[in-house]
Length: 182
Image: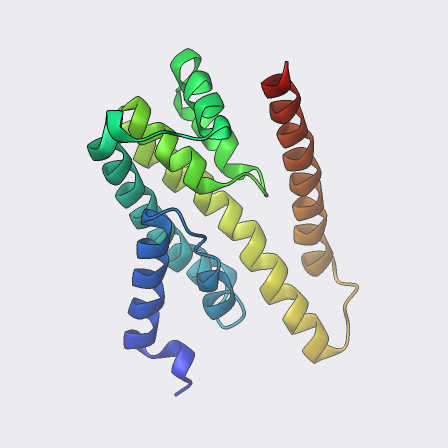
């Protein structure tokens, strides 16, 4: 049995993701410890569990610190967005943007005290969609390399979707940065 499939390793990776995300650090170690070794559906489930647990921890941490915390400019901007539009779809959209820091979303949501149920549903939906694209791209690319046939539609499509998401994320981030400077 490969170490990556051992239950203790899987649980440890999920816990590490949850803890790092809870304190505002990236949980990307999970992607590289899970996505190459599991089919996209399983990898998506495992990554979503770790990410949502971390999102919940960050929400609770920031909500408990509250007034004593001095958020940065981007967090303040997201808090402003949540005050105007903290609905499920807005939260999901922010989650789907590559390059947009999840810690900012998590802490802004906790500081804004968004309804926890909607927040967790949005985190689950947004992160699972994002992890499915990432997992499919990584797993498909590795399979294509093994088969020496990289030009398969099921390999190229997740990469195209990922590229579109990256472009959207960069555009959205520039837009946020521009409005912040005004």
